[in-house]
Length: 184
Image (tube, rainbow, N blue to C red; front, side):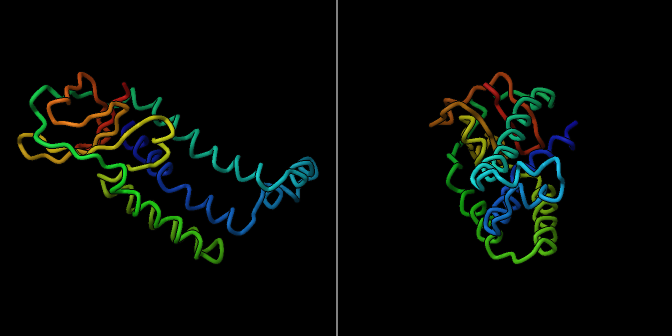
């Protein structure tokens, strides 16, 4: 389950690259389904409808990830275990925006799939980077936490933590050894 969940999180975090490419090229649903007589009505839809539906794919997939997280291994953080906390919402945003700029410069499908494959593999294998700004739509925040014994942890949570003493989590779900989600 954990590996499948990590693959889903990686898809969520990287799929906007493909969407930005399709939007930038003007590929509406009619582009993909125009050759099928039963889908002729799709070609008549405004492009904005196609783009909204494209965007809904990673949003719904992120929602599915949040729901599935209840099946991950469970952990807790006791009072006094955390030495420092840093809000991480903004620190990963420049990296994520890089996906958008890359997508805008890709010229064809072949290049897109190569670049997407490389980004997907590196994101999956990084073992630490599950930053996905779509979690923000669901009310989640991102934190870099250091425990008293020096372990660096990435926490995804709906809670608004400000000080290390604020952190007492009775149930956190382990995505990997360095990443946890508090569903709260």
